[in-house]
Length: 169
Image (cartoon, rainbow, N blue to C red; front, side, top):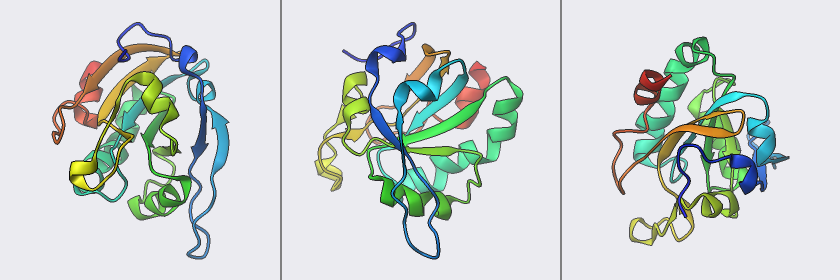
């Protein structure tokens, strides 16, 4: 089953990790959270990248949300989350490298549990990423309910950008 508009994300509750910024060049473990806590009582954007430091993710996808975070939040969005199947240590340095400065919160689904429950995992072995990666997507979630979702075709970056999501708000 793949997640769709109208689905309640509370049924997919799993343990995730907030990425914490590096300290003195050392990556941090991350803060353990439950996925339901991301959505409870809030309107959020959840966008996914197949891997930190990959070209499209680093040069286009993540920067689009950092650059448009103020406009997105002005439309009533409480938080913007970037989720990936990288471990929290990789996301620690990726957060610092991205210069998000809190505009985007990075979430690690290192075991791919949340991603698999949503039906949005893929085998990225052909790209050297391994199995259990998250597809590239973006969704609007209002108090746990998916109100919009756009999933990219493999290797594409067209429908999940901040510009595309902003038009749906």
